[in-house]
Length: 478
Image 1 (cartoon, helix red, strand yellow):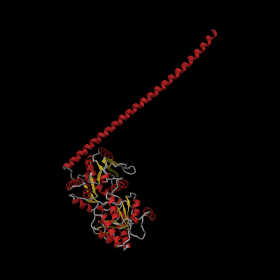
Image 2 (tube, one colour):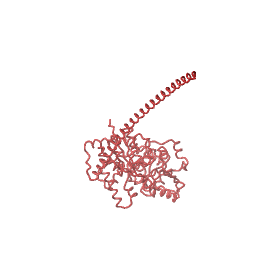
Image 3 (cartoon, rainbow, N blue to C red):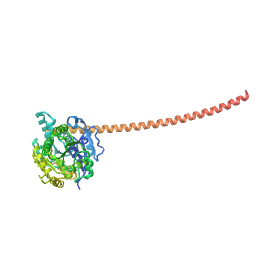
Image 4 (tube, rainbow, N blue to C red):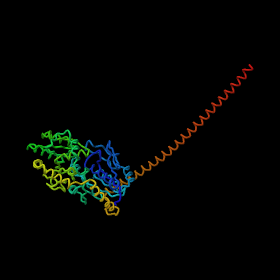
């Protein structure tokens, strides 16, 4: 039986901020807590976050709310309180899912906690950096910093070979392990009643093929290819419906382009949907999932669609296409609208082919989070043993010394905060005892005064009685 370890999962995003990596962290934590050991999530503070409903603790560290600018908060990766709480949790391993603020905080904590550090590279950060930072020199500097954070980890995981190749293209020279993500929907279609309830109110004729996209509405997801292919397909006279589920920074522009292409009556946008059963219903209702993205490193939505028996059209050679066989459990196209249009036209004429490939995808591509995290946890045990045996190289580059110093400073401040809290508790306890004694003394004084007042009243009454007797006797002689 494997040892139960406490695993600290760090990421720059976490609900209520929703994206694929945040979803991965939630599922890692839930499955570790349910089946293996104990999970702790460390993530930046987000206004109005509700963390009480999780079966594992969520530790929030300070952040700046930059959601209006980039859609995410910016974490401030220096938190003595986080160091103190993780020491109390006895974390055995740090696993960061982001090479930015979370990796910086993890590097600071590694020496404080004396634990190994694992990083999973989920997404092509060079594309995100290019969108967020203007100027080639600044972009190159940000990428160098990112690669330094990755290289500083004891072990690096990637979610696909394509993700590893992207990391190599940025300058990473170390080794990596492919550790696939799972999907958080069960295998199998939902009921017809659930489908009808989820899709009610939309113009979706039963005999017209329905295409589906689920994810962030960003142009780099291949959305322009989809829209232009649909416009060309409609020009051919092919009937269809298209549903986009999700939202994103390019959402408004995507809707505008759909309108300009004359697709308003056949192309619909639901906005973001957080309920997983509702999304399952849409996967079940769809005839085909469209995902012409070369940006995504894993394409979990391909496997989510497969869970419901829906096949995906994807770009040949993309990360999403890893492990997929064209015509067997998925469909491949070239990365352009003409290729997608031609494929959709062929498949609409052969609906049985879509169903057959969807059934194969359900059987061959599905990977549950339970199985994915079980594999990851088994590797955690190897990493912990390697670390304790001194098999990982020492991190002694200049920046490593800086992060170690930062960690030591956080540890010192955490000790100061602990002592301060203990002193406050002692002072509070002494003050509470003093107040209790004062209250007890006041109560005794009140009892004493009440007794004296009663005695005085009794004496006054007796004096009045004697005085009355004296006056009556005097009346006899006067």
